[in-house]
Length: 404
Image (tube, rainbow, N blue to C red; front, side, top):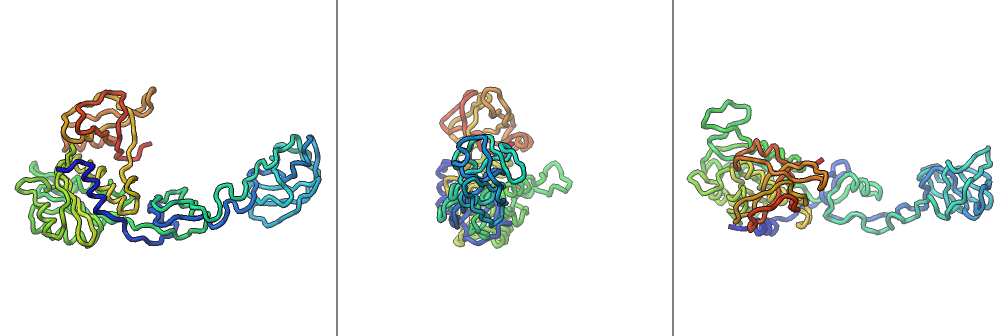
């Protein structure tokens, strides 16, 4: 049985970014750059005003109060270039090019105007209130490295330097196949021996929230032939197939052999983690990945967060070291348990006057207790060789939802 780290290393070894493509800025949010974004010119390209006011020569106002003659104006977007000579000034507005001869901008609030005579109340610093040419970036400078996820600011940078169709890695499409004769749809009436399929919708929600497209979500009985056919059918629609249930070692745990019959190569089956030990990872010759999750919903959620989402981020082009984001938080109460497997303990985040956000353990009755899972913001990770951690210690926190 692999350790969680060994399992992740196996996943990283057998997953590669999808081919790159060019996307419009309107549709590129959430995608990962496959090529760096470079400044096509200096930013700003020339000296520009940082305030509304007057462009002046600082030496003309070494002693204030003093007056200068207004000879014109330059607005943002204007190509006007009035020459500022001794004793003159130009009205200027935020973002406008500083006219030749001027070396400073004085805020309008520090002046008094009487027609074309402008009285200045205090002397400027040379260069004040000016965005200098190349101050933010110089032509040819790398502004966004390959591997960066395009968010709002990054899309803005692309637009600012004329990259209207950035090169990005593809994003993997995912399909879900739940196994079990006891599973019915959420809309159906159930008998005492039946369950509504909660894993499928739960996984769809988690994948969608992370920005991944789910092509299909369906369930199938515990029949090996039907599972094999379901695997083959769904692999034709996706880059990653997630199966839930049927991955342990019981009579009806048919997923491992079904994956192999459908052409998959199993790289691990069993991870020293709690909850979620009977997890499975496989690939096909075509580079698609298959992941088998236990049927218990909390085990499935841990597998999704710990392994599947990181694998999908890797396929989407995220560098390996950034595929498994974690935070560090203070533990709000003691946590204990058995050693031997790395443990994901469910917690909720609460505000604390001393430590800010702290992680409070969520009481649950086992890995099937999805009701308790809905009260959790994520899990804290307890190493396999640690029996207990006291309140106040810093621990690694794996979020299940957006915090804030």
